[in-house]
Length: 198
Image (cartoon, rainbow, N blue to C red; front, side, top):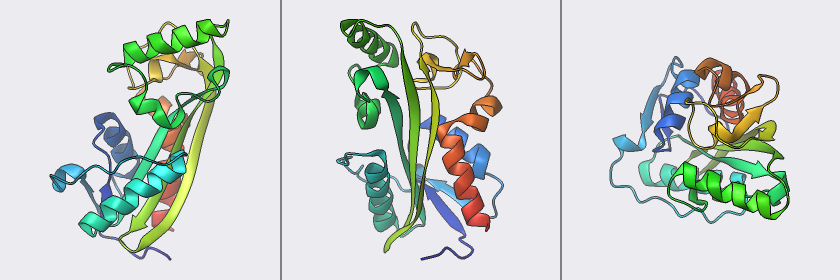
């Protein structure tokens, strides 16, 4: 299945930080970007997948089916090697209401394993769908280290505890352009951009 000159693309997320990053990459494509705010009162599909890719497909297919739109959805999160890949697909729903609470939980979990750091990665799985099925998908990853306490005032989510060695800073302590150049979401959506324009 191929996409031929789409006119509209539904960005299936309500996360303001993600929308800002996605619009920066896709914003000047010759199509209209719409969001879930343009389709109010849609039920949020339950994320029952065991992988980022399964959840991305599930969300994209649900929203494409409900709206009739060409839809892109992503599922992303942080995998910490010393915690056997936690929080993984549960990153957004991980212990604690706020990210400082999540960071504290991670610190306690690492402490229980006798460490205060770990190799880690951000993963972003992306799925592009029409109401009748999957069109295209990809995954982006960025490797780094967990760094506590949190540092930096930019970014969002787990960025303040994700240290990117090549920059010598956390992803919350770099510019938006620097983050987009290396991030998991930046990689995935640049590939989508190439696909849509090829």
